[in-house]
Length: 456
Image (cartoon, rainbow, N blue to C red; front, side):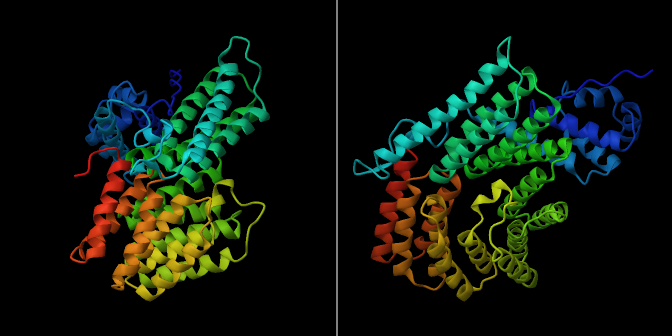
């Protein structure tokens, strides 16, 4: 009789996640460790140790397994991710809320000694951080005690409520600081799953919440500019979705991976991912969800230079969005509104060099943006600047860019900082104009102050 395989813990680390993925593909092919080893010229013992995370996976092993198991390169991509994350971790000697220290210290970025945001919003941020920590900590405390009560649906809802608080912080202040809170939440929830007692239905629901928190961590990492970690968390959310059979969680993770792939310049991967999400969601997708997925498809097609596919997808997205909200809309779809749709149209038009359409849609995006989404407002302003520079309307571009810089000083978001850097680069071509030169000097001081480094 064969030995019972050791239970894997894919959420313990990236290496554990790789091992679980390798086992999944190997068992899907019906191969033992030794049979797979003979096919790829590696020992079966090594394969077993890699699956259990006792040995680190290598690129040659991953590539050989990908070919033998027909994974489409999934394992090799994971090895690249592991190496990237481990390099990032090695470079970070002090892992304390990067890029967000001014928020937690209770002070905003200042120009001439005055707070840009003011005291009250910062106090609110600290209040939300403390209440989030208390809520999550109370769950962990009960789970770890010797006489822990059995967890139920109310505990699941508490975790979901904590996640909604994280998204509220992200919408108001950016994802850089929130990412560290999400990591804390993931660690706490893992401890709950390992140490608390709960019934089958609660256990499944808690795993789904772990996937939702992992997906959230991916978004916050993405906004913080930590792309390798964002990809890791979305892959982990996808893995959990497959383990528990939750299609909605898979669609969430796949759509975010698609967006990231387009941003990183991988439009074909983005198209493949969003098409997979559309296929999984087809039996139950609401009009708004279909609209969002079509917008992602359009964005990817625009980056691939496929004009016809871009406008076809965007036209369908607009029609479906017009159907309005639905009770069955996924909770994570809260952000998808008229302003975001018009921003997607703006970006697609800019990618395809269609300035008249970009002009109209950029104005529509700014007119529709919600005041409680300050980061989105800054983002839309930067795309408006790109349109205005393309039209050689430099005076209005400088004024709009100034609004964007002031807004950027109020959020901790690497994505926004990158957009501001791009705006400054676009305008630097007109640095011989006095107003542009003045803007570049002023904005450089503000962004340097925000980054808490001396002006270069």
